[in-house]
Image (cartoon, rainbow, N blue to C red; front, side, top):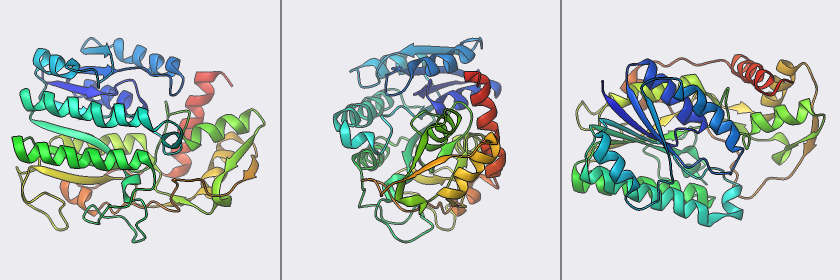
Amino acid sequence: MPTALVTGAAGFIGYHLCARLLSEGWRVVGIDALTDYYDPELKRARLALLKARPDFEIIEARIEEEGRLLSLMQTHQPELVVHLAAQAGVRHSIDAPRSYMHANLEGTFELLEAARAVPPRHMLLASTSSVYGANTKIPYAETDRADHPLSFYAATKKAMEAMAHSYAHLYDLPMTMFRFFTVYGPWGRPDMALFKFTRGILEGLPIDIYNHGQMRRDFTYIDDLIEGVIRLSSTVPGQGAVVTGDSLSSVAPFRVVNVGNGAPVQLLDFVTAIETALDQSADRNMMEMQPGDVLETWADTSLLRQLVGELPKTQLAEGVGEFVRWYRGYYGT
């Protein structure tokens, strides 16, 4: 039975990825600090479902703790490493930048050092569409420059990409850096728009809509994203042909891949989809643009398709409906 190490295993994406790996016959070792950035009980509820599986093990610890990841790698010798642990959130990075430095930079350094000592077959590391920052060319392609991040969160993720590339080059470590676009679905994060809007509408509270709704996001349903990650896990940089528009490094087994839906949605249409799923109207509080935000995200997914084939694309109404059903069931509303 092959072993996978997943950092951030109690998180939204981490939970879904661990569940899928377990169903695919992997033994999964997870690590998560269960920080209080959002409700730790939601994280524990995710973990409770994973712990019911016999081939899952969780270590509650911070990845930036010196030597912790090295010890895990030495003990479990994982073939696959998926690095999802991070301090997330664009707006929070304005208020608490130090937490991003510790988790995103120091934590990634600890992982890279551990991989140098105990090399896995393939490492996949989570970046974000936020690294495209001030870019005006859309859709965003992996080969576009991403030199102007608009938030410290995005800056730390871009720094992670550079750190990972250097280790891939120096130590011949195959790495895929995937740039996620706005992910949503059941068990989602409470700081994300879908969760906040759903909760606000059900509680009869105003929902804050930034830039008066004049924003577009490439919303990506969680199951579609996980399918992409699973397929990419067996697509090892440097072990296949170079494809058109490839981001494969010329000096390292390192590739950057967008993982998104490839079809941006107007924010107000997103709100309407939530209202429809809830059968309840929102009290819309129109606000100005927030620092660190971008007007639009849109993934060019042509590289992803060439590498792993066509992926499922869950329609927005269906995906929002699945989230609302989960939310009502979990919170009993």
